Length: 162
Image (cartoon, rainbow, N blue to C red):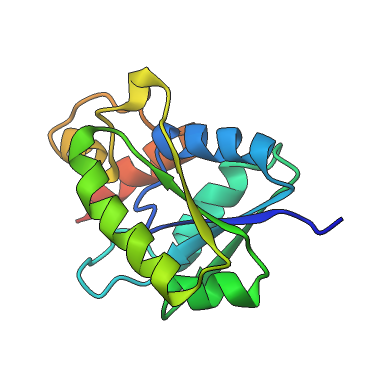
């Protein structure tokens, strides 16, 4: 039987507990999850690629079927090279759906062998995203309930420097 591999793409700048919730859910549905840090020309990440990889590896160290990679180019091409059958996308709210549906339909058009699977995070994370976490931290708010301890520490260090 062929291994069911899924790709979970994102910039993860930084990884949040909402991302981690989706990773944990997906790890129970698929044999292998490849978390892929995408290059996005529209975003200037606060954390380097190496830092984001380290955050993800630390947070997922106990989830044995998870690995982390970086890619550039089309996601469906990357999925094809990894023999992935699915792309995991998190949906927090209805507002996410329209964009995600367009991307899923385009990806299906480019590669019919890869299916987009939408997962909803635990309701306590539906409002959470990396931008909000950085904004709360920037203004001195407590981010302990939004990110892992390592991310919280490194985010506060980075904001003090910069």
